[in-house]
Structure formats: C-alpha cells, structure tokens
Length: 168
Image (cartoon, rainbow, N blue to C red; front, top):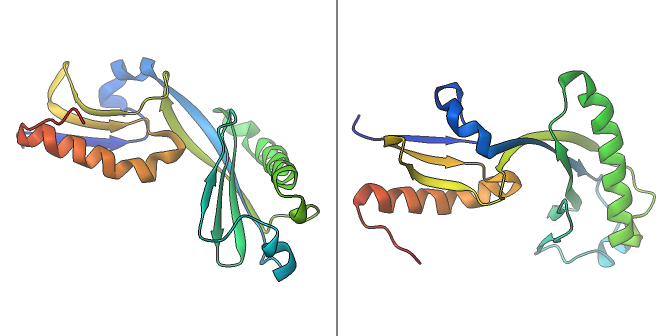
C-alpha cells in the first residue's frame, strides 16, 4: 500500500515515539432504568444531547425513556483499582446528574461501566499526516468525542490523501 491510515484511540506499539503526546484516561457512564413520565417532563428534552463545559465534562443523552450520562473522567488507573473506581465514579455521576436535574434524585443506575480512551496533552485531536511517518495518516486522541469526531478525521485524511487540504 502506498498509504496507511492508523485510526486508534492511542498510538500502537509501532508508533511509540508518538505516545509522549497522549494521556490515557478512564471515563464513566451510567444508564438509568426507564423513567416515569413525571420525571421525564422535568428533564432535558429527549431530542437533545447535552454537554457541559465542566472539567471533566459531562454528556447527557436520552435512549428511549432512559438517560445515558457520562463523565467523571480521570487519568487511567491500574487494572486492580478499576472495579472500585467504577463503583465510586458512577455513584458520583448519579449525584452530579441529580444536582443538574433534581427530578432524578434517588434514581439508581441500571447499568454502569468505565470507558478507556486517550486524548492529546493539549486536548486537540491528532488527525492527518506526521513528518516522521511520511506514508501514514493518523486519527488519534479524539477523547470522549471520538465517535463524533471520526467524521472530521475522515474528511481531513481524505483531503490530505487527495492532495487538496482545506484550511477551513
């Protein structure tokens, strides 16, 4: 192949020199049980995805009559501490959700889990070529917004591949 695309959350072993620009993180997610109509009326409208700018940030999204809420990110922990951290951080998430939307106070999550990801040190994802790897294009370090940013990464990489970069 004349070009290779590396789309990953974190640089693989083949690209260890790039790792100093990335930090591994753990994020946490809770999914509530189906909420009664009275609680749903006092929550964020179900057609919105809400993201706050706190540090760490939070994402709130409706899935049917359930709320998916994520946040409480921190530096990646060793495997032995993950289970305890998940219990503590998802409990914290439910508390933070009840502060944002008091109507949900007292609701316990039906599901809770952790999510490993990486982000760049400066918070700006790395999309495109790298001078030390002339035949490679990278889509790395998009953080919690990785799925949404994958479209942007694909467009940037395609423009570089076609030789038509667009500063816009």
